[in-house]
Image (cartoon, rainbow, N blue to C red; front, side, top):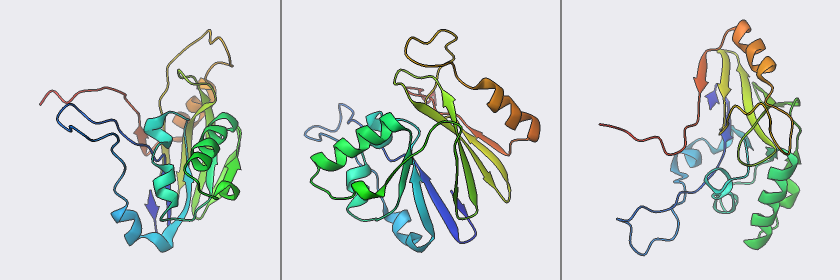
Amino acid sequence: FVCGDDAVIVDCGMAFPDDDLLGVDTVIPDFTYLESIREKLRGLVVTHGHEDHIGGIPYFLQQFHLPIYATPLTIGLIGSKIEEAGLSAVSLLNTVHTGDTIQLGCFSIEFIRVNHSLPDSAALAITTPAGIIIHTGDFKIDYTPVFEETADLGRLSDYGEKGVLALLCDSTNAENPG
């Protein structure tokens, strides 16, 4: 997300190759655009700890030295990936909890509890001068989660009542019919 002289990144995953990419083990992000706005980057915010959301972080850290914000379990998983890659960027890791709000430049970002197949997942309410953006991350509606509290649907509703400029809703394995 870019606003004026500030930019934040949400998630930094990797993909697993399709059958037509023989010999390719992983597909990592292309950071070319981020390189062009390097001076605006204020931080990386992570919704949860699955590979398609954190797998690119070791590659990212080879080019960028930015603070990373995520919930405790996600920070633990990212820390392990950083250590495994032989990087010394653990000092960049910042633990937040659902309900916390951080300020990165002109962006105010609240972490909102959601349920997913991995505990400690968060949606993001990103308040900008232009309006509020809700980024759900991966989520499911689960009224009886086994290991955690239910999603904070009330908080999401609060933002809905304020007015949301854009809803970015993640959808794993959605296919383009065209």
